View 1 (cartoon, helix red, strand yellow):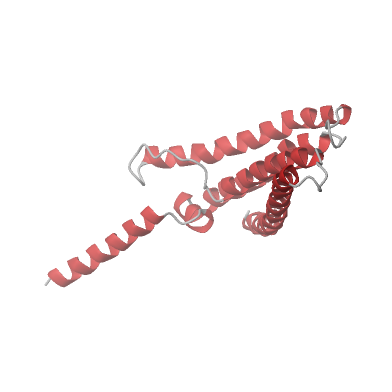
View 2: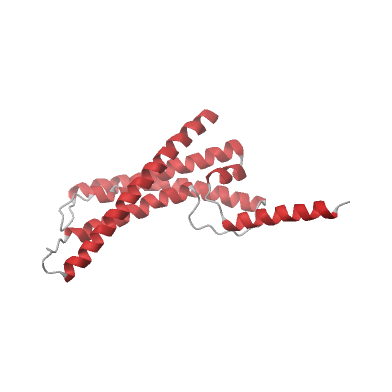
Length: 194
């Protein structure tokens, strides 16, 4: 099991680096297309390219879905903490969160497949781009979400929830402050105990 986790972790780290580059390219393309749209509306010498609006929208959709997958990997999505940290109900809700993310990834793959295939019969209005390139974003995002959720769940099974979150979650400022306060309390207690 440990070798499976190691392999999955290496795969996911490589995929995450690739996703960061893809997201950076999409963001740069999105910005360039939006700037061109603004400038071409105000300068009559530039042709109005209607496909730029479509492509900027498509890039935005891909950025959202791929960014969501990275958010699942590091638990950067919205989380409601209803129970005191470290209690059984808190641990159960955190485990449920990762299981729910896995389920959403599976749903994206299962239903997104048919949705992507339906894009073979449709074309974008201005650019005539086959819509499969846009509709396949759900399947792609679903695959990343499943891989990232599986690593989180496997890590939890082998090392526990707290170790997994320490290794994979984006550091939370409140947790760091609480940790600093705990260290200060320990120091104060050591000084006051004879």
